[in-house]
Image (cartoon, rainbow, N blue to C red):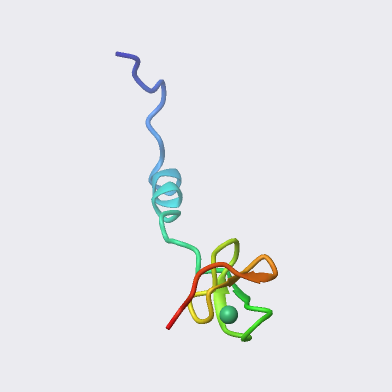
Amino acid sequence: MAQPRQKSSKSLKNKRRANWKLKPLQLAICPQCKHPKMSHRVCPNCGHYAGRTAVSVE
Ligand SMILES: [Zn+2]
């Protein structure tokens, strides 16, 4: 199996391993009920999507 030619420095290794955290959720505001929702998803509060009610929420 191919092996790395050079040993990666502690600095490079630590910088690589520092990049694992998830980014905070990007929430959009529902135009119908102004509730924060995930973009490109049906609103969990009112079931509204793409200018119409896609699913009924009781
Ligand atoms: Zn909504």
